[in-house]
Image 1 (cartoon, rainbow, N blue to C red):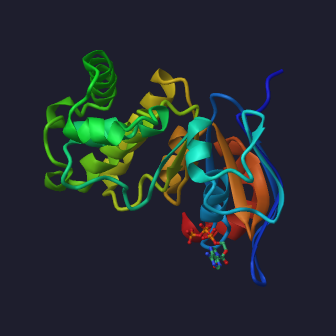
Image 2: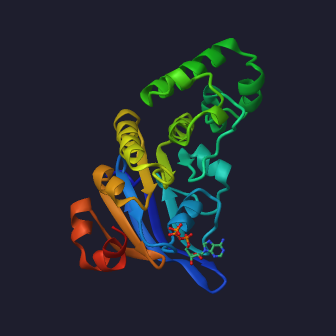
Length: 256
Ligand SMILES: Nc1ncnc2c1ncn2[C@@H]1O[C@H](COP(=O)(O)OP(=O)(O)OP(=O)(O)O)[C@@H](O)[C@H]1O
């Protein structure tokens, strides 16, 4: 049996006297779409920051496809195939959609993709292949008509999709989505959920999603990890978790 795509083992992260992660352990199987939920302060962002190499836990191990990332810096974690979207978007407003998406491939091309994307490529074959790849991703997310639009001219809902496209350009094996529904209106949440499900089907990627919007979580996840006070309160399928009395009390009963 192959290693889980993400294996979090006894992770302890403290900020002074605060235990943001208190011996956290869970794993995500290859190909799964796993949601991490929990009340404010449960440790969700801390977890993502540890997996992405932004925070270094004091104890425990975090294995991505069997490789310990605990002491790796963010760019090294990205090179291992960990992609990420951010709650507040991490796009360049003056660049076009295509340029922003091309920049997502930066971790795969250390020899200056940034200058390539902004000032033209030296190697035309390479440029063509990358552009074809970026355009293919744009098509999957129904963004092709915005290819040449600058990011600053587009709505937040479209930019969320552009950010997803940018993350896919790094060809992640593990994709971390940080509150993808945040800031979206009700109708757009459902639409965005459809795009996440589509990405999961059409790209060979394991997805971990931190999300407060329980409607989205329940509709697209096949596994849910509920955190509370830095550790796992419950795990299971959406049906199992939604029936768990501890979860109802700590989270769903208050927030649903
Ligand atoms: N950089 C930091 N410095 C000090 N304390 C922090 C830091 N980051 C997180 N914490 C604390 O760690 C705990 C977990 O916070 P975290 O942001 O991971 O929770 P969360 O589940 O993401 O919450 P939310 O849903 O509100 O984003 C909280 O008590 C928080 O105050």
